[in-house]
Amino acid sequence: MKLFFNIIVLALLLNCCKQKSSINSANNSIQTDTARFPAVLTDFVPSKSNPVFSGTGTDTWDQKIRERGFILNEDGTYYLWYTGYKGDESVEKHLGLATSTDGLSWTRYKDNPIFDSGWVEDMSVIKHEGTYYMFAEGRGDTAHMMTSTDRIHWEEKGPLDIRKSNGEPLGKGAYGTPSIWYEDGIWYLFYEREDLGIWLAVSTDLTVWTNKQDEPVIKMGPEIYDQFAVAMDQIIKYNGRYYGYYHATEFKDWHEWTSCIAMSEDLIHWEKYSGNPIMRENKSSPILVSDGEKYILFTMHPEVCVHFPKK
Image (tube, rainbow, N blue to C red):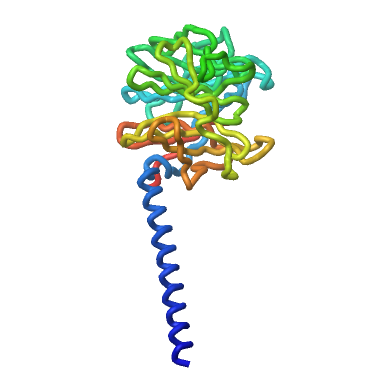
């Protein structure tokens, strides 16, 4: 009887140890995730003023807006480049500009559209050595580049020449949602093909882009929230690590999108945040912008909404 009692006690002690170990392991995992994905980059609440920018809904060239716009904050002014159109989604999409001093109230540029001689949507903008570079989708989801020195007047540079890792031309088909990063003389281009994965190509001359690998650097799934489509929206660098904000969907018919985040040490190998998606309810195409003191998250599709840090 005494032996039986001792066995029971031992079993209970072992079970308690296992539970404690599991709790400690879960806590360590949460702490590690928080360290790798700090709350300043992941935790946001929507503004009561949303949406802060949308199509006019009237008889104008930008009756509707769509896809990813892009925002830069320069000297206290937010610049929003956006895609406007009138009619159904097959009509040509043009480029507009709006400005704001607080990210909430926006003023359209008086001479919009600022570029109407070609299809422009899903843009990514970066300023380098006094020149603004815009990478955007054209007709047929084909990525192209434009440049400007004043944010308003843009010069078309043509479609991007993207090559496989062995130098062979990329196969026919869409290559869209271009997202750009520049560091140490190298341009990094993230792009998708039919939203079935995120690829990475690099260039030193902005002329020829070569895949780092011919497989996506971020694949769909196995998580449910991004099992049917992914596309990169923005890359930032924070505390020595790279963070990619991307949109995704768990629905085969793509009827609803979410905003997600992934982290990398080298821009090639990515770890998805365990708390993804960081925004649901069709708040997608995330763009993170600093106001000088904190990060603000804008979701750009299907209308512009702003999200402030959780307190």
